[in-house]
Image 1 (tube, rainbow, N blue to C red):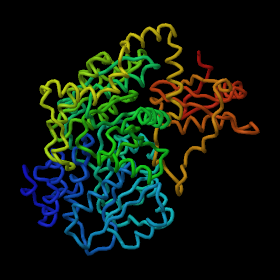
Image 2: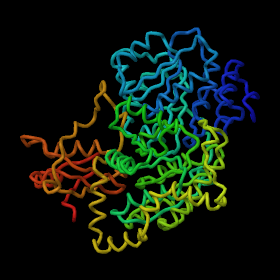
Image 3: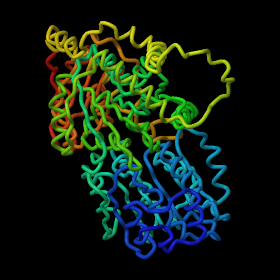
Image 4: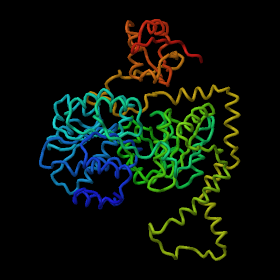
Length: 570
């Protein structure tokens, strides 16, 4: 199938797809559409974000769905509100000429009452996040007893966000006769377990690989100390004029901090993270899609569902722990046949982490020096001419008589003067600026690494990462108690804990363990950072609970494994 017109899709669907400008299906669509149309088996499809998965599963299902029936026939589960809304929008566009078809999106952060009201229209399709779907099931508002198709979109992301129990609960509410289509970027142990337990003899489709994203993307990294990280970001933005990029951070706090820094320095930037209301998120994403802002500072989860094809850069202000997350981030640029640039800012002690990413992904990430002031001004001059030659229309009218006599200037002299006016402020800012890399390393050596530890502690606050749509009851998170106000560092003690990700330990488990270890206390302790690593973990608790935590944990077990906590070396 080289063209959509060569598929067996109905004329109404082909008409809608054609009006959207789709002519040639993507690789995942070429393999998935014929399979779903002709086969009754379950399916596992491994494909990266941005490869056209929504059309791959929705077009053939729309072709087969019974418009006359008012029963729910298709359920699509996805990890975030943004992706939920994007899928709902796409399905609506694909079914433009199917007047009797209705679909409803159900997700947290919006009125559950309004969503229940929309279900009274008897939609055949439900697109939802697991937490809100569970709420709807508990309220008897959803009945999946007659669904024919279940789609798990970005299954690996849903599992990493703690939705395993909810997914299993929802799947038990569906008939065994349904077809299940699991879409994932990776095939980790949790995804493999879900597929073994809930899919029957699935057909497997794999499109591309973890390395495919690097083909038209240039990868660069810059080593800077923690004091100079923001300044380095500023220089890299200035050295790459006319960019349209996402800047990825690890935590909500860091995301807002970097966005505020950029806005205060006059950049058209904004933040996207889990502390924003749905209305605020929608506003930020609309501004970014319309290019009213050209720099979006975001967490990984918040950026899910933001589908743009024209990013020039992706900037990793903080490296992710998972190499495949690095690939997902980078893959947001270099789409639609365009070239892209992936830039990583790393602290000196993160060299090992970057090496692991390079080894795991086989991506060639080239080290570069943070540009000097002179290099930045040269790049800005080139950027002015780049913009000049790409403008092919007039945005406003004015009388040519307003242009004074410029005959005394050569074209070179005229451009020189105009560039001086255009770039005056930036030139003054970078005048006599030292090489940032030299400053960074000299200061970091003086600190003997103390500064980087402080930076790590500051940036890893709230290391839960944006679990925007974690399992919910109503609109409140379940599974972990509301965080109490954190005390200052001198009132907290940091513990080393002997279990980690390899033991299937999650943050919610760590919170439960701490609660049980301090259960006999009159009041619960304040809990600080929780950092779950591969083989071990760290957590912070009020100092007054130090002895209680150490002694009680020693007599407890987690999934049959002995636990040990000791005060971490500072």
